[in-house]
Amino acid sequence: MTGPTPLAGLKVVEFTHMVMGPAVGAILASLGAEVVRVEPIGGDRTRRLVGSGSGYFPMYNRHKQSIALNLKDPDGLDIAKKLVAKADILVENYRPGAMDRLGLGYDVLSETNERLIYCSEKGFLPGPYENRTALDEVAQMMGGLAYMTGPPGQPLRAGSSVIDVTGGMFGVIAILAAVEERHRTGKGQKVQSSLFETTIYMIGQHMAQKAVTGKAADPMPARISAWAIYDVFQTKDDPVFIGVVTDALWEKFCKLFELDDLWADESIRENNNRVAARDRIMPQIRELISGFSREELIAKLEGTGLPFAPIARPEDMFDDPHLNAAGGLEPVTLDSGEETKLPALPIEMNGARPSSPVQLSSIGEHTDEHLANLGISPEEIVRLREKGAIE
Image (cartoon, rainbow, N blue to C red; front, top):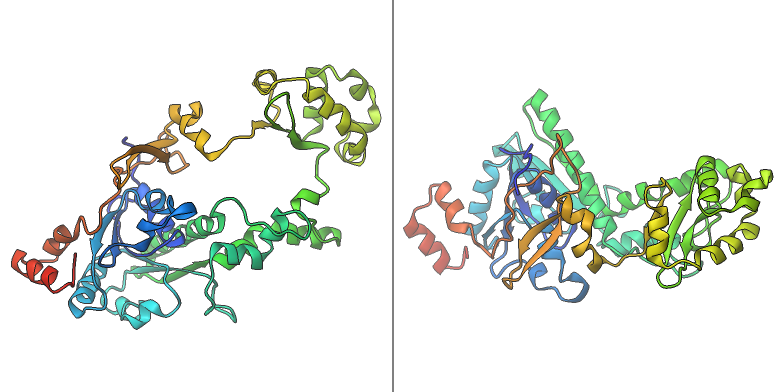
């Protein structure tokens, strides 16, 4: 795959694990930046996670190079500092203070590289909570997202690492803003994004609802919807979501399904009145939809402009015709050697999908190459490897 690489020429050094930090580097790399991931000797433990974590590494570490260093060894640490001295951007998401204790904090590194943009991905931005350990799930629980997702009294985390990934996206936004500012000032800066504040930004609409209406938002399964027809409907086989979100779509919906009696009722031509009459309207709609198979219903809705969606599973996306036709999936070779497809960066630029060469690097695959670029001789590389400073 070839496509726009707008960040080509930017050099990124990444000290990360799990999802949030790697997501930052994954986005930058997909946009063409050269991302060198510093792994510990033996590799990042994220490579070996099982269960729900087994997809983290291949999803968020494509397009990157790998160098394996022992940062507790003075030689390994010195190599890391030399890499950063030539970098545009550093990304890290270790616990607060960890990079400072290693001598890799912003204050130290910016002394030798004043153009460095240093992105820290943390659980919390500065404040009373900043030294707490956070996870995606912790932030969802603390920030109200789990409360809004589950039924009343049963908080439920979202079914993906949405806060890790979105927090990484905010990190990228901050980095790109800092790059633009560096064009004017010639100097880098430290930027941060966090799990908790990302969650708060995402539930801000519910905070605003309370401010506007005076009533606290109910969890989504118990909410009063903004629209009368905005739900999952059971067909003869599999369920389908349908949303009727404007008065014009209500007219279209009634005519499409020959609901003459509902369209004739002028008291529900306006959306808010339909919401008030939802208990009267919905049984008739549910009975109507139950008479179609999923495929029959999709065929009827296709091309009408009415929002609808079959209820899919993640594994269904491998064969999705739209994704496969439009470059939404890119080929990846896993550590096992198995070939698969994973989501590409979901944007388009100048009519094409951004794409840098797809690779999932093995542990320390690019160590020798980068040490040579730093002027380290082959003999010295052998010595460093023998003493355990590199892999």
